[in-house]
Image (cartoon, rainbow, N blue to C red; front, side, top):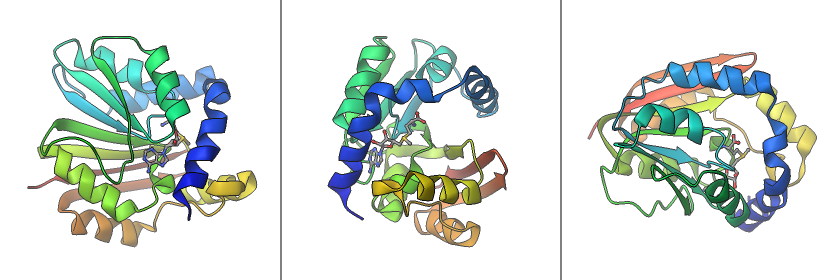
Length: 201
Ligand SMILES: C[S@@+](CC[C@H](N)C(=O)[O-])C[C@H]1O[C@@H](n2cnc3c(N)ncnc32)[C@H](O)[C@@H]1O
Protein backbone atom coordinates (compact mmCIF):
# COMPACT_ATOMS: atom_id res chain seq x y z
CA UNK A 1 0.00 0.00 0.00
CA UNK A 2 1.62 3.24 -1.06
CA UNK A 3 1.63 6.17 1.25
CA UNK A 4 1.80 8.84 -1.38
CA UNK A 5 -1.14 7.43 -3.30
CA UNK A 6 -3.29 7.83 -0.20
CA UNK A 7 -2.17 11.41 0.32
CA UNK A 8 -2.91 12.22 -3.31
CA UNK A 9 -6.27 10.44 -3.11
CA UNK A 10 -7.42 12.45 -0.09
CA UNK A 11 -5.90 15.73 -1.34
CA UNK A 12 -8.20 15.50 -4.33
CA UNK A 13 -11.28 14.93 -2.15
CA UNK A 14 -10.68 17.78 0.31
CA UNK A 15 -12.59 20.50 -1.53
CA UNK A 16 -15.82 18.50 -1.74
CA UNK A 17 -15.44 16.50 1.47
CA UNK A 18 -17.88 18.46 3.63
CA UNK A 19 -20.66 17.74 1.13
CA UNK A 20 -20.43 14.06 2.08
CA UNK A 21 -22.23 14.54 5.38
CA UNK A 22 -26.01 14.70 5.63
CA UNK A 23 -27.76 16.47 8.51
CA UNK A 24 -28.69 12.97 9.67
CA UNK A 25 -25.03 11.93 9.78
CA UNK A 26 -24.14 15.01 11.83
CA UNK A 27 -27.02 14.38 14.25
CA UNK A 28 -25.91 10.75 14.69
CA UNK A 29 -22.28 11.84 15.16
CA UNK A 30 -23.38 14.29 17.80
CA UNK A 31 -25.02 11.42 19.75
CA UNK A 32 -21.87 9.32 19.39
CA UNK A 33 -19.68 12.15 20.68
CA UNK A 34 -22.14 12.65 23.58
CA UNK A 35 -21.34 9.07 24.57
CA UNK A 36 -17.55 9.55 24.67
CA UNK A 37 -17.52 11.31 28.02
CA UNK A 38 -15.57 14.34 26.83
CA UNK A 39 -15.03 16.68 29.75
CA UNK A 40 -14.23 20.35 29.99
CA UNK A 41 -10.48 20.97 29.94
CA UNK A 42 -9.59 17.79 28.04
CA UNK A 43 -7.00 17.88 25.25
CA UNK A 44 -8.29 15.67 22.45
CA UNK A 45 -6.46 14.22 19.46
CA UNK A 46 -8.45 13.66 16.25
CA UNK A 47 -6.43 11.32 13.99
CA UNK A 48 -7.13 11.58 10.24
CA UNK A 49 -9.32 14.59 11.01
CA UNK A 50 -10.06 15.40 7.36
CA UNK A 51 -11.81 18.76 7.13
CA UNK A 52 -12.65 18.67 10.83
CA UNK A 53 -16.17 17.27 10.94
CA UNK A 54 -15.75 16.36 14.64
CA UNK A 55 -14.07 19.60 15.72
CA UNK A 56 -17.15 21.59 16.67
CA UNK A 57 -18.74 18.71 18.56
CA UNK A 58 -15.53 18.15 20.53
CA UNK A 59 -14.38 21.74 21.12
CA UNK A 60 -17.75 22.77 22.56
CA UNK A 61 -17.32 20.05 25.18
CA UNK A 62 -13.65 20.72 26.02
CA UNK A 63 -14.27 24.47 26.26
CA UNK A 64 -11.43 26.96 26.07
CA UNK A 65 -9.56 25.30 28.93
CA UNK A 66 -9.15 22.22 26.71
CA UNK A 67 -8.38 21.73 23.03
CA UNK A 68 -8.88 19.66 19.91
CA UNK A 69 -5.83 18.80 17.83
CA UNK A 70 -6.54 17.39 14.40
CA UNK A 71 -3.88 15.46 12.52
CA UNK A 72 -4.05 14.73 8.81
CA UNK A 73 -1.34 13.83 6.32
CA UNK A 74 -3.27 15.27 3.39
CA UNK A 75 -2.16 18.89 3.23
CA UNK A 76 -5.39 19.84 1.45
CA UNK A 77 -7.53 18.27 4.18
CA UNK A 78 -5.42 19.86 6.93
CA UNK A 79 -5.59 23.30 5.33
CA UNK A 80 -9.34 23.06 4.86
CA UNK A 81 -9.78 21.99 8.49
CA UNK A 82 -7.64 24.93 9.59
CA UNK A 83 -9.71 27.36 7.49
CA UNK A 84 -13.00 25.88 8.71
CA UNK A 85 -12.21 26.16 12.41
CA UNK A 86 -10.28 29.31 13.32
CA UNK A 87 -10.81 28.88 17.06
CA UNK A 88 -8.26 29.22 19.85
CA UNK A 89 -9.00 25.73 21.14
CA UNK A 90 -8.52 24.03 17.73
CA UNK A 91 -5.11 23.10 16.28
CA UNK A 92 -4.48 21.33 13.00
CA UNK A 93 -1.23 19.55 12.28
CA UNK A 94 -0.22 18.17 8.89
CA UNK A 95 1.38 14.90 10.00
CA UNK A 96 1.25 11.14 9.65
CA UNK A 97 -0.60 9.14 12.30
CA UNK A 98 2.24 6.61 12.33
CA UNK A 99 4.83 9.20 13.46
CA UNK A 100 3.06 11.72 15.63
CA UNK A 101 4.91 14.99 16.31
CA UNK A 102 3.84 15.22 19.97
CA UNK A 103 5.60 14.53 23.24
CA UNK A 104 4.62 11.54 25.37
CA UNK A 105 1.42 11.74 27.43
CA UNK A 106 0.08 14.90 25.76
CA UNK A 107 -3.62 14.03 25.32
CA UNK A 108 -6.60 13.02 27.46
CA UNK A 109 -8.45 11.22 24.61
CA UNK A 110 -7.91 10.24 20.99
CA UNK A 111 -10.43 9.53 18.25
CA UNK A 112 -10.02 8.23 14.71
CA UNK A 113 -13.22 8.80 12.77
CA UNK A 114 -13.41 7.07 9.38
CA UNK A 115 -9.63 7.02 9.26
CA UNK A 116 -8.05 3.95 10.89
CA UNK A 117 -8.40 1.57 7.89
CA UNK A 118 -6.36 4.02 5.78
CA UNK A 119 -3.32 4.19 8.08
CA UNK A 120 -0.32 2.66 6.31
CA UNK A 121 0.86 0.85 9.46
CA UNK A 122 -2.01 0.39 11.89
CA UNK A 123 0.12 -1.18 14.63
CA UNK A 124 2.55 1.74 14.55
CA UNK A 125 -0.38 4.18 14.65
CA UNK A 126 -1.65 2.38 17.77
CA UNK A 127 1.83 2.50 19.33
CA UNK A 128 2.06 6.20 18.62
CA UNK A 129 -1.44 6.89 19.91
CA UNK A 130 -0.57 5.00 23.07
CA UNK A 131 2.63 7.02 23.48
CA UNK A 132 0.95 10.42 23.18
CA UNK A 133 -2.02 9.55 25.41
CA UNK A 134 -1.94 10.09 29.15
CA UNK A 135 -2.39 7.09 31.48
CA UNK A 136 -6.05 5.95 31.57
CA UNK A 137 -6.94 7.99 28.49
CA UNK A 138 -9.25 6.37 25.93
CA UNK A 139 -8.86 5.84 22.21
CA UNK A 140 -11.99 5.49 20.05
CA UNK A 141 -12.16 4.16 16.49
CA UNK A 142 -15.46 5.27 14.95
CA UNK A 143 -17.23 4.58 11.65
CA UNK A 144 -20.79 5.15 10.51
CA UNK A 145 -20.72 1.66 9.00
CA UNK A 146 -19.96 -1.89 10.06
CA UNK A 147 -16.56 -3.39 9.19
CA UNK A 148 -18.23 -5.44 6.42
CA UNK A 149 -19.99 -2.38 5.02
CA UNK A 150 -16.65 -0.55 5.03
CA UNK A 151 -14.94 -3.26 2.99
CA UNK A 152 -17.74 -3.04 0.41
CA UNK A 153 -17.60 0.76 0.31
CA UNK A 154 -13.84 0.84 -0.16
CA UNK A 155 -13.99 -1.80 -2.89
CA UNK A 156 -16.68 0.22 -4.67
CA UNK A 157 -14.63 3.42 -4.42
CA UNK A 158 -11.51 1.62 -5.62
CA UNK A 159 -8.20 3.40 -6.23
CA UNK A 160 -5.88 3.89 -3.26
CA UNK A 161 -8.49 2.84 -0.68
CA UNK A 162 -9.65 -0.32 -2.47
CA UNK A 163 -8.14 -2.74 0.06
CA UNK A 164 -8.34 -0.61 3.21
CA UNK A 165 -10.11 -2.35 6.06
CA UNK A 166 -10.50 -2.61 9.79
CA UNK A 167 -8.75 -5.70 11.17
CA UNK A 168 -10.98 -8.53 12.39
CA UNK A 169 -12.14 -8.24 15.99
CA UNK A 170 -9.58 -10.79 17.19
CA UNK A 171 -6.74 -9.14 15.31
CA UNK A 172 -7.62 -5.62 16.46
CA UNK A 173 -7.80 -6.84 20.07
CA UNK A 174 -4.29 -8.29 19.74
CA UNK A 175 -3.04 -5.10 18.12
CA UNK A 176 -4.50 -2.99 20.95
CA UNK A 177 -2.90 -5.34 23.49
CA UNK A 178 0.47 -5.19 21.69
CA UNK A 179 0.34 -1.41 22.08
CA UNK A 180 -0.47 -1.73 25.81
CA UNK A 181 -4.14 -0.79 25.60
CA UNK A 182 -6.57 -2.58 27.91
CA UNK A 183 -10.32 -2.58 28.57
CA UNK A 184 -10.98 -3.19 24.85
CA UNK A 185 -14.53 -3.04 23.53
CA UNK A 186 -15.58 -3.50 19.90
CA UNK A 187 -19.12 -2.92 18.62
CA UNK A 188 -19.59 -3.79 14.97
CA UNK A 189 -23.15 -3.32 13.68
CA UNK A 190 -24.85 -2.13 10.53
CA UNK A 191 -24.34 1.64 10.45
CA UNK A 192 -21.93 1.84 13.38
CA UNK A 193 -18.47 0.56 14.26
CA UNK A 194 -17.19 1.73 17.63
CA UNK A 195 -14.02 0.36 19.19
CA UNK A 196 -12.62 1.74 22.41
CA UNK A 197 -9.55 0.96 24.48
CA UNK A 198 -7.89 2.42 27.54
CA UNK A 199 -4.27 3.44 27.72
CA UNK A 200 -2.22 1.70 30.40
CA UNK A 201 1.30 3.02 30.77
C1 LIG B 1 -12.15 8.99 5.03
S1 LIG B 1 -11.27 10.42 5.52
C2 LIG B 1 -12.06 10.87 7.05
C3 LIG B 1 -11.81 12.30 7.46
C4 LIG B 1 -12.57 12.76 8.71
N1 LIG B 1 -12.18 12.05 9.90
C5 LIG B 1 -14.05 12.64 8.44
O1 LIG B 1 -14.63 11.65 8.88
O2 LIG B 1 -14.60 13.51 7.78
C6 LIG B 1 -9.73 9.73 6.09
C7 LIG B 1 -8.71 10.79 6.45
O3 LIG B 1 -7.58 10.17 7.05
C8 LIG B 1 -6.43 10.80 6.54
N2 LIG B 1 -5.31 9.86 6.67
C9 LIG B 1 -5.18 8.67 6.07
N3 LIG B 1 -4.03 8.08 6.45
C10 LIG B 1 -3.42 8.93 7.31
C11 LIG B 1 -2.23 8.89 8.04
N4 LIG B 1 -1.40 7.84 7.96
N5 LIG B 1 -1.94 9.92 8.85
C12 LIG B 1 -2.77 11.00 8.94
N6 LIG B 1 -3.93 11.10 8.26
C13 LIG B 1 -4.25 10.07 7.45
C14 LIG B 1 -6.77 11.14 5.10
O4 LIG B 1 -5.94 12.14 4.56
C15 LIG B 1 -8.22 11.56 5.23
O5 LIG B 1 -8.36 12.94 5.46
